[in-house]
Length: 208
Image (cartoon, rainbow, N blue to C red; front, side, top):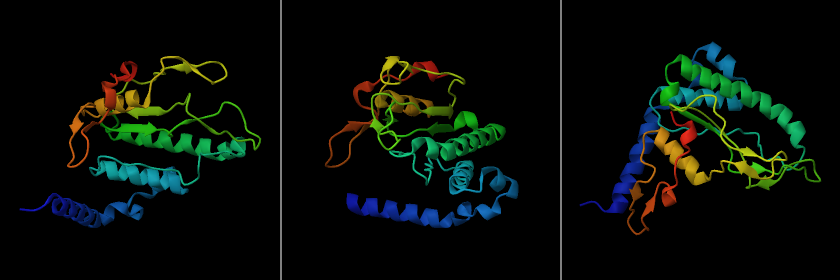
């Protein structure tokens, strides 16, 4: 009888072997030139095209990170002049492609960071980490369209309407994907935990 460690090692090996067998999926040269032109020429756009291609071929979860950091503690305005137009164009292209392929309702697109930024500039004309208020964008996954939930005061300092936590967000994401957000995990030698702790409620305003 195989031990837990042996089974885990075998599972990891099979995953690696599966990735090696899918090498062709990572060759963007095999995709239409028009696709590469719409997403390119930068690495963020081509990585997003790669994500679309993986999802089309059955990959259940893909994360795309922009190689140029949004963590702008200095010269935020100048850096955002480069980042924001690219982000708008590429995310729009991804959502459009998924819609045209009939995949958007079954694919959840989430664009977010892990915290907000200070509403005020620091001495280096940047913005520092700020956990009190932050925003994100979600599309697809059967969510309602054109909905804005919550607001801050006029200075962006505090949330004044519909404050939600990370737990509420994750409960909503799991629910949109058809997964039980409160399912338990019981790993050997580890405490039992849930996908979302404290049975945090979903953000009902955006669920269709």
